[in-house]
Amino acid sequence: MRIFLLVFIAATLSFAQWGGGGKSINDYKRVSVSGRDVYVYAPSGVAAKSPLLLSFHGMDQDPNYQQSNTHWEAVADTAGFVVAYPKGATGYSTWDISGDKDTKWITEIISQLAKDYDIDTKRVYMSGFSMGGMLSYHAMGKIADKIAAFAPCSGYLMGGPGQAMRPVPIFHTHGTKDDVVGYNNLENNLKSYRQQFNCPAQAEVEENHPNSENRATLYSWGPCDDGVYVKHLKLEGRMHSPSKADVSDIWNFVKQYSLDGVAAAIEVPTNRDTVFNGTFSDSLKLAGWTLQQHSGEGSLKLTDGMAEINVTKVGTNAYDVQMIQKGLHYEKGQSYKLTFDAYASAARTLEVNLEKDTDPWTSYLGEAKTFELGTEKKNFEIKFTMNEATDEDARISINAGLATGSVFIDNVVLAKIDASDITGIHSQRQVVASAKTYSVYSATGAFVCKLKGTHVGEVEAQLSTMNLTKGLYVVKSGNVKKIVAVK
Image (tube, rainbow, N blue to C red):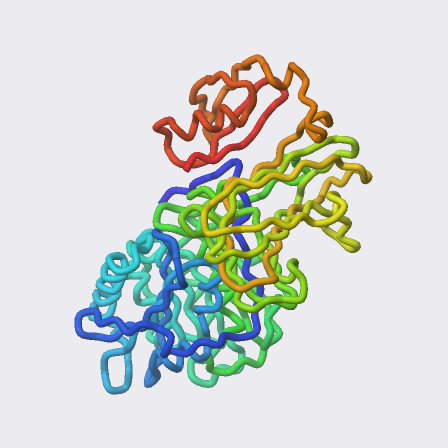
């Protein structure tokens, strides 16, 4: 297991706790795998090579019970991954936690869903409640080469902990009043795995961890061997039950891992005068962008290398469903040009603003600009001069809350321009700019090549035509430095 350190990467989205889900197991597709049922949910337009999360029910339960308590689809709709609820085989819906029957079946599920949904087989995650949690621990010793991270809930191996195939990430949730799988014996189980993985003896403790149902304490041990962590979410007063209150925490943990390793902590640069991840690259996906919902409702996901804002309920204002990026630096007296590509599932308007990120949300354009979108992709631009005091933590807001349906956004670029360009007067220097030499480096700092261009945008266009590995590159010339993504 290797640890991949990405130097210039944006923070992956964190999903806050949410209030529920409106879907039932009837909204899932029943798939037969080796003659047994699996209930699968894939968000509309889910991208190829998206993760898969498997959620296993407890003894004498079924996928309907597990789904109605966890509602994984609500997180999947926003985060863009496939969810599956497998069904236990016997009359009491038990799982094989001593042999190979069910772990072999899990590998068959993964293979089938890889064919049906083109999932990323390196990012398959396993969570289970009660006996499903026991199955998760059993799988650590059988198929840890197929599962990137594990999240057992209210279940551990009652006969004693097993031996994991490798150091694996574990996120265990458990209620202190569990009267079926007692809380008191949990520590001996977790301690065994921490010792196997050479985790630190002392946990980092976060008291009053946010949870919508119980007072929660989060214990974290790590980094352990191969950079994994073992975490335990202790839920005061919780009895023996799965809960939708925990799924966001589980997702925010497991999504960091793949079978290739674990990414380092990801940060979006702040106080910058360029857009981060405006091309929604394969490596960054939606990093650096977030969705805010006010009186409207919608979701944000990656679709064919573009950001898709899908509005399901209109608001009173365009900004009631908005995609934003924070951390931008607008300098007083400086002129800028924002360009972006956009189209919609049906003809509609789209509002764009460059503004203050806190109340009173001052628009640096005077007022937000409205554009007419059609069903074919077009390029749009905004030019403005920053007349307010310098703002080192401003934002871009792309507001879609006045109509239902999808808006697709790509190639968002913010560039400094001369003030004369605002009025259409171009100096000779701008028109006949001399070419400069730019050095290109990989994200790890390795030199790649030198290219000539009149500006960084030209170099970025050249990089997109070269046979380079997908990812981030640094383009430098003198004091000019820009991070670009090659898709």
